[in-house]
Image 1: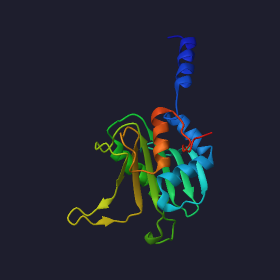
Image 2: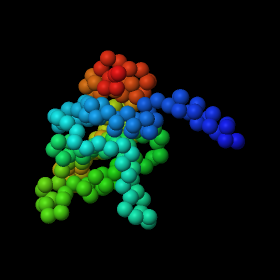
Image 3: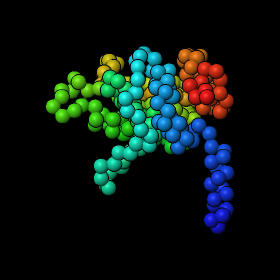
Image 4: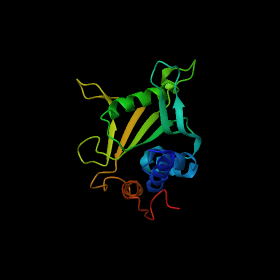
Length: 198
């Protein structure tokens, strides 16, 4: 394939790209603080997030050449110091559990400052928006917790993982705005409630 053909195919790919494309998702959300804030507010309404104080797209964390680095699609921090990684995941590589753990560890490494007690650790959130059903139950949203196996007691380690499933058949268990957003990601059609509405 010559360079002209490669260029034509590349241009065609970009013309067909939608919000599900990781590069476009990261660019739109990280370059528009109001969209990032609204997206976090509708996914996590219980947090009452007032504003975003830091936001970066494709934020890379690699400390050396030996170990695997991480690149967050969108990294954000709110007014209370809580940290968020928002990821668009189209391909199912059957490694999402491991990836959540690795992404969390990179957020957690910044969640307690030198000299602070572990009690002051801030909450960290890894959010995956997936084009496949991670939990295999047809649900629109899955969350994970650290649990004592013998008692079922949940340990509050301030680490939160959320997986949104755009392939779910029924979004009625979620709010209208999350429903509209997931429908947009799925179909590329904007409703009046969608946070991406121009």
